Length: 380
Image 1 (spheres, rainbow, N blue to C red):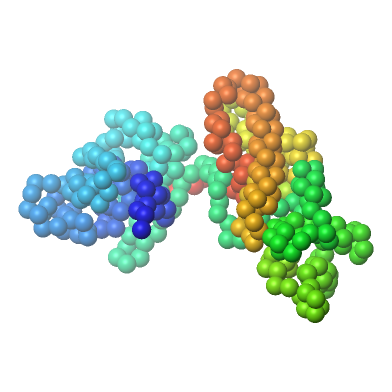
Image 2: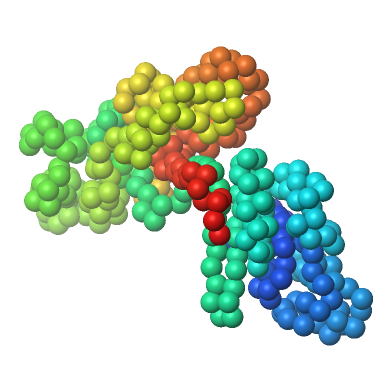
């Protein structure tokens, strides 16, 4: 049995693990969120699953003890601690906190939280405030703005564009002649092509609209079912690809449109009124808006992925490449709009990486944005 590579093992390790980068560790659960620990006293060592008798017998404070033991759990990370209170750090060097991507504060008094929150708010660094009362506790996020590209929705439909096929897809589908294929080719035609072919037939014979109602979709499924080959006795052959086509009718025939949440991003001032301080997220949102209004003809970039299906390798790869190549063209078009925007803002092309651009276009359907006003930092 082949052993998974180091990259695969690392991906498994961090798949669902929360990784935070700063800690004021007081309560027993707090050392789980760490990279650097600050504060802690020897008397704190009495609680915490990671803190054992050996540490209590030594002259170690809790931050040092938690750091050393947590490092033993993962050889791929490093950590450090500073034996200083947040209050003194705020008095002497408030910019100290600007080096972090996230600050986690536990059991801090309100006066300290107010000062810390203001420093981090002005630097747009998230603050996670945690407090426990015995077995009860709460976590509060303090952040000016948080943008998400990969929002991982529960139900994400495939982006197949069967209702609005792009020219390359139309040309590819036209290359298939289901009525004059031999049995092998007929039973190994990708179900996406089957649905697309019978959708054309539906438009010509039934309606100019996509099947919407339950009755219409059942009629469309029956239309596909009639296309299954029959043997010399008139019995339908066992064609798994046609069964896949029938099974996927409900999800494959979704309308291609810009989601309302994305329209809201397009109409926000952060998108419409870009500034030199604008983040790469908002510059890409504006570039995406320009793409939709021009090359996209009202649609977002093609995602470029298709699901696994019953088909021979050659047919599947050809279909996959049709979507991939279209996605590459759309990414390039969005990139051109982004480059013009960067130039107008006095930013270098390197401000947005190729990887960020590609990821943004791939998940353009599910972009997410949350924000708050400064009232959130005035009370705890």
